[in-house]
Amino acid sequence: MYHTNELTSLEEELSKASKKGMKIGLVPTMGALHDGHMELIKQARTHTEYVIVSIFINPLQFNQTDDFLNYPSNPKKDYNKLKNAEVDLLFSPDAKLIYPKKPSVKIDFGSISKNLEGALRLGHFEGVGIIVMKLFNLIKPNFAFFGLKDLQQYVLIKNLIKEFSYPIKLIGVPTVREENGLALSSRNVHLSPTGLTIASQIYKGLVWAKNNFESLQSAQILVLKLKNFYNKQKGLSIEYCEILNSNTFKPIKSLQVKGRITLCVAAYVEGVRLIDNIFLKE
Image: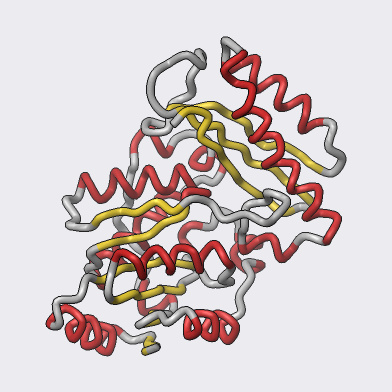
């Protein structure tokens, strides 16, 4: 595996791959790699001949300084995991390379970014948009791989690729979970064994909702019942619980509408913020 934090060597390696006619797959990460990231890499391996993983903890997408400073990081462990996964190139730039100065351009994703994560984490998606566009411009991948756990982010990037005419195929990879259903997340390392058990109730509630939504007429009733379930779980605090159109991310009232319907949840366990979702209707 070739490892670089410089633009010149990045360009040289990517040029070699392109000249060989290799399809390039990009897996953008912020490090603290887990099996969810490994699944992204596995999918990249099946779609492309050359896999590049980027590791960059992007300061622009954190709306709280403490969250940025406390974000887990283990470069040596990450390097070994990527080497074992037979990744072709690791790109791990520092902030000065990516942002020589504070960006003066802002990206407005429109209505999709105004609710849920966008409403609660001001500036988050603008920061995501800038780093994703920078990586797309620097690496010029044929494919990009993102996890569906961050579904709102996935939809925004899908729109970004379409709006800016990037010749990139976006692949959404289903959420990888622990045996108890908890969605894998880099933030899970901050949870105690008890906290991990409490957090697993998030997915348990989502599964209940998927199994029962057809018997209910309104989204409001489903959300009310689900919140009642979550409120009974000691140590679990729900921030939001919403049912939306999977493509527009607009809230829906009737569960009988056509198209994909998604239930999204954000919660706190032991001070750690966790998000998850489930497709109620495919």
